[in-house]
Length: 284
Length: 284
Image (cartoon, each protein chain N blue to C red):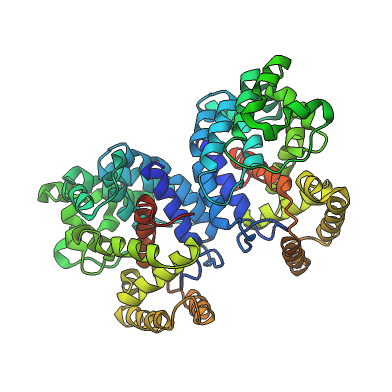
């Protein structure tokens, strides 16, 4: 399967994996963000992912994926997941198995034009982000394409933008740390047991147990993010989906009720699914 | 959205619709046929659907869709759905809204070569079909590509093959009756209430209540198919997903337990979803 197809499938498997505490999954919807929005978002992202597989630059491919993803009424479904998937797809084109070094070469090769396209992507959909540091204020992504002149003046590539976003954004962290957690997630998916959807849920929990989710931290503060990680960690230790499954289901419902959605952790789960499928270390 | 994209989304929405008594849905798996197999089947069918949207003949486009669909371990997931979707996609290319007459023109224009490709599709995946009538025995689809010489000798087009399959196959019936029930399903989807997944489930039940499912009849006999339709009809009358939802959920579980899968009804639901999405009479 071409890597753009695999990436679309990874998005579908990610949202279907259950229980994924706090997020839309096979058995849970949020009030205004439902399962079908993720299905439509994944199909909508196809053309942008295909551009990346055909060798288009990361920024325009990403922007096009977001434009297509946003053609449904749920709003932002897979922005972060696509930001990590697009360079991975680009690294896997020509039939190469994706590697950390190839993905790093892709992101390090991004340009100012890629950064401009990234800012344009924010014109297509509302994405929740926290306030930037003071010196980055003119480059607040919420400005969308209005920020492009400053971006060009400062000569920042998309890699530079990600580098400056790292504290507080674990998708950006993947870009500058060689997709460390994405590849770790892929390994865990391969080592896990059960169906691919069970594995996706187990690996989601393991990622959530490991580091506070940066979207939760931005939305609800560091204390809430830390609490969620502590709870996930306890549940993960209790052998996760074997003996602890009812407790995880309860935790999932509680987080949905509280409106706490660990979206970054879902993004990394999707990236891990992509890598594992490309490496054929998991099967469907 | 290009019609092949819409068709893929229709396949995803169909399997996600719940409760769909007897079938894999958002909340139910069968023993060896699970939700993720349908997700992978829909993504795998992409290239064949794209061929149809680009104007390829129906037979080769269908065969290619099946070949891709079959690249997962669940076996047949969407054979019937693709058999009804491929001509609809072909009829909707060039941005035309799909109509019954355009779809009929497509199927009536099929050739012996289309029929040969259709038989080749059976080489890629095991499909449950009943025994053919005696004069069609050399053309039993289970012979796959081995039947092609007889097919060519008799000069049968794919439309002719469908025409001869009609008693006992309600997908074939769509081909020769101007996609009557597919378009009726689309209208019901537009008129229904609730989310698109709720509508898909309600329309599935209405189709099941209307005519015995031909896959159920082939597998379990006419009496079982009639019983299922009678039960669906009673539940449908009880205002379906409003007051009767728990009873429908119970019926869904019972049919799964008994191994009774109204697959043809699901195929028509997918076709209805495609038409309604193309006509923009439903939204996501």
